[in-house]
Length: 426
Image 1 (cartoon, rainbow, N blue to C red):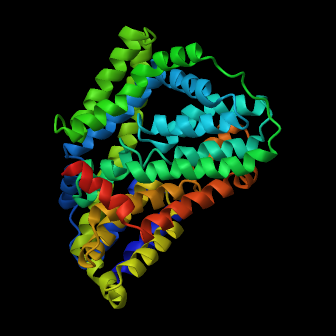
Image 2: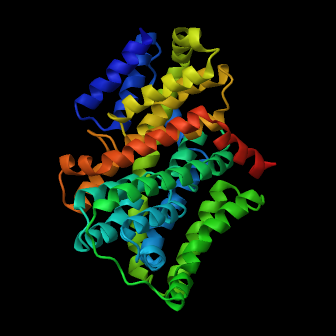
Image 3: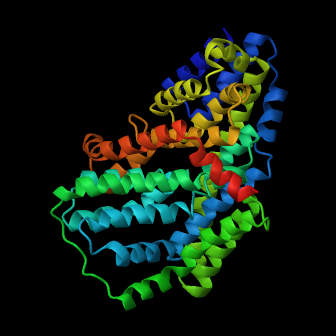
């Protein structure tokens, strides 16, 4: 009955158009009322404690770092670097989109932000060069969901806080899956771009490539600093986020000299707005998570799946199918916050590595960003590409399919995730 009340109140509130943060709190209050323990003081205290975490400080820092990178010209130089490298081959701008998606993922960790930044520049550029607009927007959108997987990933931070799993291990474990996603997109683009009758850029000379690399060097160096610092034990994920902010500001202000006082103000305001939404959502979810635990919902679900608890592969397939379905109706962050406290006890009881599960879970949720009707990244790509949802679905489906294939490969071959983690953390 508790599961029915929680799910029913949550879906009912969402159906009425109530923002997800308030819907989560409503579902928690309904559970409280049913269990006869309604207390506004508990709600307020849990709400405040939900945002009181040092690890969560990484989120506003990484968001601000992304804003400063755009304002400081780092993003534009990275795209120019990718064009100099592969812009001359057939379908070259598609490979530019993939390479840029990976590089941007190493800088911001936000699928929506990366899709907006890359799409705003590349989708018009690809359309002007003769590429199919819907396919171009679909590729950019599919590349955007690499951001939640390759460090520094904001969803990994949220999952790590909600589950107690090491954020550093999640960051390291996401490297190989993220690169697999990029290679999968490249493989599909090789096939679909054969039909493209598009213009190509002139081949750049070695001197021009070197010049573009030199201009993008400071942006390309940031992922090395972040991962190297965490691997060497120099700083934590939260401290790495603070380093990223200072680095982005320093490069944009002192080296590239593009960040003015007004740009800094605008970046701070934009980052504050995004952070306030994310942090309130996390705090509200902690109220719901606390009630999920008190109502013993994970135990009730464990009893249902008990017959397959001794078959981890089958259990993972079932959980991932559930997450795929949920991802079509809910955005990435709410799905993480709602399902993590429910699924983690089941995963731990089944003996599945929580870090490995976390990477599968976030990848699955990232795929949900490409599935309608919610499909946040799809909507962003539609707006930037000036096309309808029907059109972008025609362009994105082969790329969406290959991301699902990557997910299945990671489920069947766990060593693709676990071996790199063991190697980097020993």
